[in-house]
Amino acid sequence: MFLSCPILAAFLGMFIAQFVKIPIHFLASKELNWKLMFSTGGMPSSHTAMIVSLTTAIGLMTGLQSNAFAICVVVSVIVMHDAMGVRRHAGYHAVILNTLLADFNILIETLKDPNLKKRESREKLKELLGHQPTEVFFGAVTGIIVGGLTFYFYPF
Image (cartoon, rainbow, N blue to C red; front, side, top):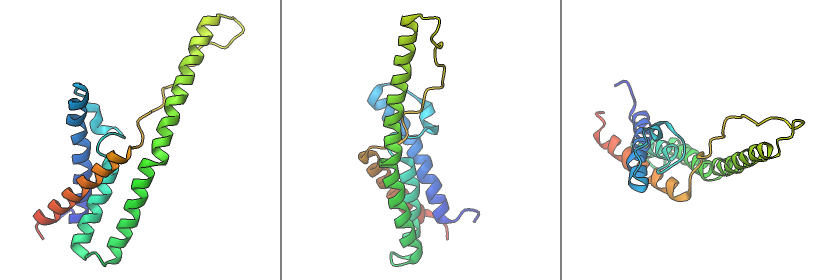
């Protein structure tokens, strides 16, 4: 077969988690946003679903005592910690910087001083980068389910 079970599980986990974001967002906001299929952040974490699907498939194939499973567990913890930590805080910083830029532009327009630089026209920073702990948790649940089902249905 072209794709190994763990690789197939990983990509299915990511794809399913990305796709599920659309109906979850629709239920929460009554807005159908297909762009979520290709965006970062949101519920559930697709990075977490991908790595946990891989870890689950590796664990089922090689056993929970294998070195490959141990490596996957460590990488999974790093990915989940990063999603809830650095990436989430970078998103918070983007919110603040976007607000400061908007406030700066309002101030410049209000003063109308010819000596002041004109409006700043920079692209707005992406604010939805990381995940809340519940988004990572449900990404992990998605990953376990997808990894288990892929292993179960994969034709060996």
